[in-house]
Length: 209
Length: 209
DNA sequence: GCTAATATGTGATTTTTTTCACGGAACAGC
DNA sequence: GCTGTTCCGTGAAAAAAATCACATATTAGC
Image (cartoon, rainbow over all chains, first blue to last red; front, side, top):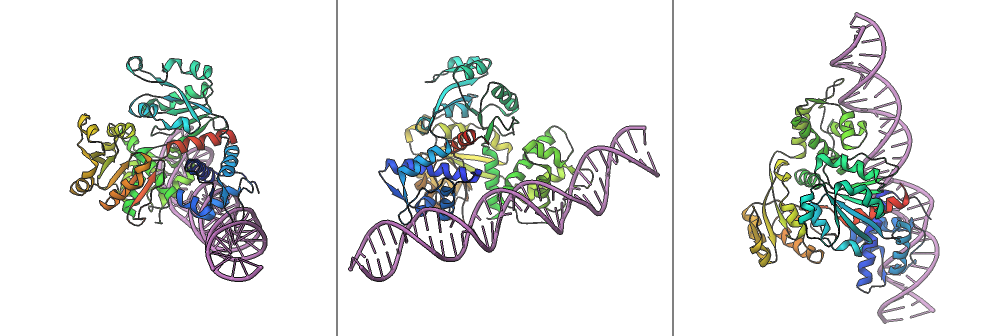
């Protein structure tokens, strides 16, 4: 029975997809909801409910065929096509992201970096092309980039996001510790806020739960 | 009326705390739930419900006194004391984290870095002391470190987490794209998984919502 | 001092999400 | 081929979270 996917469900299904990848690499052909649940840290029935949103994929009594599950997830989550991405802001974090090797194996192709400092761009040694910020719109459109990793200083986050939106970007992973406003219907945003995660963690530590 | 704080509520309150900081720096003395909501991207009534978990803090008709709100949050969330933290794994990401300046202003004191490569440690130029991995337990206990940012390669994440737990750490921000198992009652974990966020984003982009 | 606009606090309601419980199916060991 | 175990799919129940609606209070303008 197919249903609309909620964000918590999508999040977990993405983790399941990752697991399928790893299981395949290990040569494992079948997997149960219990095993999947253990691997991604949620109960088995949650996994089953999530997977069932895609329709019947498993075999009653004998678990899931890894390849088949992965294929279903790929289609349902839209991982068929490779997404072209860019990194905006090449400070410490942006540079670290540029050197991250896992993007390719995960279905992403990071094809450009941008920074407002021409000096920095000229002295950088990188495998991928880097451009000055004022070329952002042109490069994004020419290279058909759909997705941006935003790692600029917080004060210029909104202005930079505006340029990204104007360039036709469709998704932003926002590493800046501020909320950015974008037209919700056109552009999706995911926020990663390290300091806030640390604060939440700290609170959980004191509240003891 | 004081209530138990749920994790979504804690997350938002941490953002509100951050906002209070910024408002204070800007010299703003009062703020409304509407303004706070806009700044952190949630509706005003959500903010009010969240803040009310701390008891009555605002003034009916005239909003919140920034200083008072901040003081309440500080107490409720346990931000009175500075948390001592360490960074485990000094690859690209770990190094980037080491250079991040905002920890201090946010109530964290990052006092150590660890890496398994003695060679890397010796050649690193850092302001904070870095140690080989085999000294981890001793240093964590000596320095009374409560919190770890875990940025080691995924295959050694669990083993490293085990050492952290054995060292008496109380919270872990896990940057590795795997789920780590820890004794839940003693140690809190927050996961930051960049690839998974990108995948979720990609799914939202295709699902168009 | 009156009015309109703007505030908070909160019980009630609705929606969302998670958890439970169980029917029916496959499998392994003997 | 029988038996005990494991497993999926799913409607129903429960729990959690978000939203609404409104009583009540303050402020600003005039």
